[in-house]
Length: 281
Picture 1 (cartoon, one colour):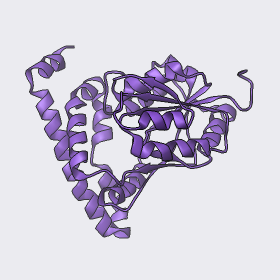
Picture 2 (spheres, one colour; picture 1 turned 45 degrees about the vertical axis):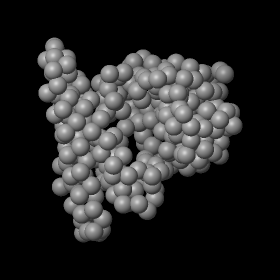
Picture 3 (spheres, helix red, strand yellow; picture 1 turned 180 degrees about the vertical axis):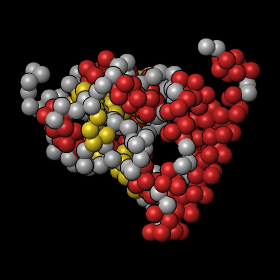
């Protein structure tokens, strides 16, 4: 497709692993976009469920890579043919105008990357808390990161850091800004379905993320502190007046999350193997 086309191809990249339960809704929302010139690329980590069948059912291009999220996204970007790339998680649902708005902002308003607001949906304890937390993050400078990029810009800055499992999106945002690229924000949102996330699953996930935190901190110590700091609670105390019970619930959840992060971080930091890697310049 010619670069001067008003409807350039958008490559939507979705890393998956045993994502059959959520993937169908995600793919339906992509096919229901008002903007139609889209290709769907799924990078699957050898799922054992029906992820592969669902991907083929919806016409996605399916690739396999047993890698972490950053590498999977970069792998998908290499396979992409679009002028733009959009990275989506399998438990996300795009509202109908997400792609159209991103293309408009990037193609006509010349933004190099676009932030898409995320809204958690669901009525479980965790989903309710995440809904409030994401609302608070929208008011923070370091609370959101772009998912939509001009492919050339994404390639030029090197994509996601393959060594990062946590904070890779904020680190990429930092690099974009250092290189002078412009980041916009659209009004259309992404729905993040977190109804099935249990406390047990959350602790396990954050413990693992915490175990990789030393590498994020080593590369971007100031950024790590800014994106991990609980100080945003203080800056958003107005929500306590509006939703006091939910605010307290979120605070209790964050205490659990930080405990899991710290446990994973300390375990990694003080293990002989990781400590050796940590001390290298």
